[in-house]
Structures are given as structure tokens and as C-alpha cells.
Amino acid sequence: MNSTITRAFNFNAGPSALPLEVLEKAQQELINYNNAGMSIMEMSHRSKDYDEVHNEAIARLKALYAIPDNYEVLFLQGGASLQFTMVPMNFLKEGQRASYVLTGSWSEKALKEALLFGKTAEAASSKENKYRNIPTLNEIQFDQTDAYVHITSNNTIYGTQWKEFPHTGEVPLVADMSSDILSKPVDISKFGLIYAGAQKNLGPSGVTVVIIRKDLLEKANKNIPTMLKYTTHADSNSLYNTPPTFGIYMLGEVLKWVEAQGGLEGIEKNNEAKAKLIYDVIDQSNGFYKGHAELSSRSLMNITFRVADEELEKQFLVEAKEAGFVGLNGHRSVGGCRASTYNAVPVEACQALTNFMIEFQKKHQ
Image 1 (cartoon, one colour):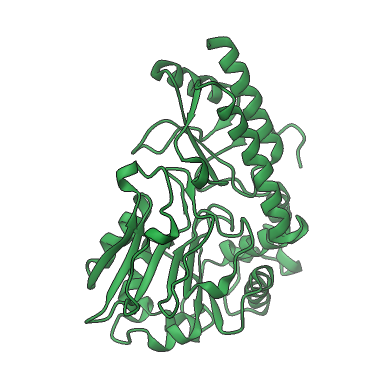
Image 2 (image 1 turned 180 degrees about the vertical axis):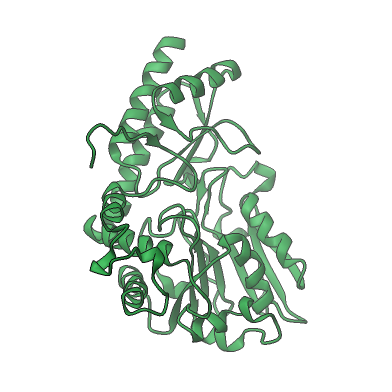
């Protein structure tokens, strides 16, 4: 890599930081992949070279998560937002109900889409508490006749994350894991369907991963548009139409990088250490910095906080930007500050931010 290039401290909420090693490899292979004389972006998605990239990415994801054989891994497009529609379109049938646990803006949007297709219910909600917490498991109410129970595993805007997932028995548990997929080990067998946009931990924007139990595919609604059927993509190994080939190539390289970090166990340990650095500064600031999420629900991916004085907060964000920190503004809907510490954000960036926060407090307290 060119030593004169200075990398920003990237805390963007998404698209977010990618591993430097992955970017460098992509740079090396960009115009001549596998001595083919062309970029992976220029290749047919039916070619042998791309076929290997595609299938290897699926195999690596299955291996990292120990995904059981009765699940399919799909590479789709449209982000999590399209999944808000596809889930109820495929599985919310006439006479059934879908239950949603509300923990933030994205779960609200998912519920809004489901309302277009059938009956819904709020299984639990932390909205009255300004989404500062994840509901406890015993607060979650649903019927065994429900089509599915939907959760959002990590909430980027409010900085909360599920620490334990509900047991839903025969009712499929559906999870939007867009912002914490690949950040820790997860027992896939607890879920009927998992979906995630790639642009936080999996790769660049443009790819959506779906992990779906095969028996659900068999039960899915058949009378919907072809491209919106999960079976269309499962039956064609996600090659029914041209997939986002470069994004899938990048996703495969990110998976290799995760393996090199010690797999999901190593990634989780690293994520815990990074988040602790910043949360410790907040907790030891005597109220100068105030976290949004309750302690029991704090996210390892999105650390949300306010500076006690509104004018100081504005100054904090200005000075942070000048110091090379990118993406620390809170979501436009809530304001404040947010540090997104996804997998590829290095420990050094988090240490630099903690040092900056400590020095800023010393100057302005």
C-alpha cells in the first residue's frame, strides 16, 4: 500500500469500514482476477472463475456459522428494506398473524411493511422507554399459531443489542441481523430465517445475505412475483438473474479475513475489547458523556451517547472531524453521537477515539 495514504478513523454506521487487507487484495486483483485478463466485475456470472468465487463464499459462511444442512444461504439484492417486504409476502398467509418485537426504527419499518400483507401484533416493545433497552424474554408475547416472530438483533440508531434470543418453539424466529451478523457466534438452528445487508460486517453495500430453513421454503406462498420468491433464488443457487458479483467477491474475501482473526470467537473477543474502551470512558466521565442504551442492552456494534451540554456536543463533533474521526454524528432522527465499531474497525481507531474523548473532557469540564 502507498505509505503516503492516511486512513481515516472510520466509525460510519454503514456503509462502514472494510478490512484494510481485503481492500488491498481487491486493489491487486481489480483489473486482472485469477490471470483472466479482466476484473471480476467484468466476468460473466456463469463463468467458471465467478462460479468458484460464488460457491466458495457460500461454503465459508456455512463453515463459520456451522450452518446446518437443512438451511440454504442466498445472496440477494435490495438490502434489509426489501426483506421487510419479502418476509411477510412469502410467509404471512391469510388467516395467520405475524408478531414483531419493536426495538427501534428498523423494526418499526419491518412491521409497517407486514401490515400491507396481513394481520400483525406487537410481541413486545421498548418504545415507551425511548428504545433504551431490549425487552426481556418473559415480556415477549406471541401465539403458537403465528406465522413467525420477527426481531431486529442489533439497533444501529439506539445502540441496543439482543444478548439472548427468544425461544419460539414451532413458530419460526425471523431476525434482521444487518448490523451484527458475523460479529459473534450464533446458533443458527434457533432461527427460521436470518437476513442481513452486507454493508456493516459482511462487505460492501449491494449484497443481502439470507439464511433460511428449507422447510420454510416448501411452505412459502407460491402466488407472488418470481423475483420476490425465496424459492426462485434457492432453486438457482442465487443465480436466477445477475447477482452483485463484485460485492459477493468482496464478501468472500471478508469471510477469509474473519477466519484469520480466529473465526467468530476471535471476532467477538475483539469486538468486546473495542467497545469496552469507549464505554469505559463514558462510564467514568461523571456524566460528561451519557450513554443512551441501558447497561443490559448495550450494543457492541453501535455505541450511542450524548455530550452533557448541547453546544459542547456540537463542538465535540467538529473537533472530532478535524482530528480525523469520520461518522460520529448520531442518526439524523435522534441526534447525539454514535461510534459504530463493526468488525473491521481496528482497535487502534477505538483507542484513538477514547484518547480524544478523555482529552476533550479535560479541556471543557
